[in-house]
Length: 169
Image 1 (cartoon, rainbow, N blue to C red):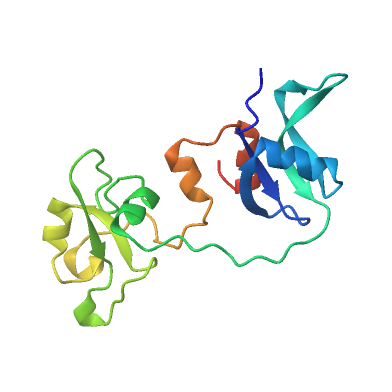
Image 2 (cartoon, rainbow, N blue to C red):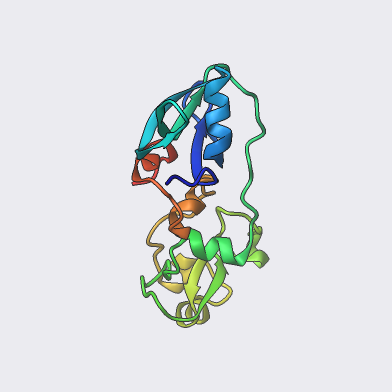
């Protein structure tokens, strides 16, 4: 038995991920000829006279212009982006704070490219200085995450085949 409220990844005509929809809606898009199946789940849904593949990923046949969804800049999302790992020492599983790479007093701003997750010890050691002034080095340069990145950290990708379309390793 297939639950038609399962999820399906919807790609634009150019294979750009634009949304996640219920399987029931995905089947409707296929039925009216607005989309094509790219990937399928390993089970079928049945009608009175036939059995059909359940779409996991579908691609729209015409380009749909959408606004790029923006992930809000919150402490929680910064820590999630950094995998709850201190970006200075690499420790994980301790109380984490967010730190301005370039301090506000030196012109640093609240943006994805200037905020990182840090353990309390490294944050206190760095203080109101740049990492270079404090003798610290960033494990990786902070950047704005792609919206669908959040799915990977939630562990809510229902099909491994989605990863190649969401640019997740």
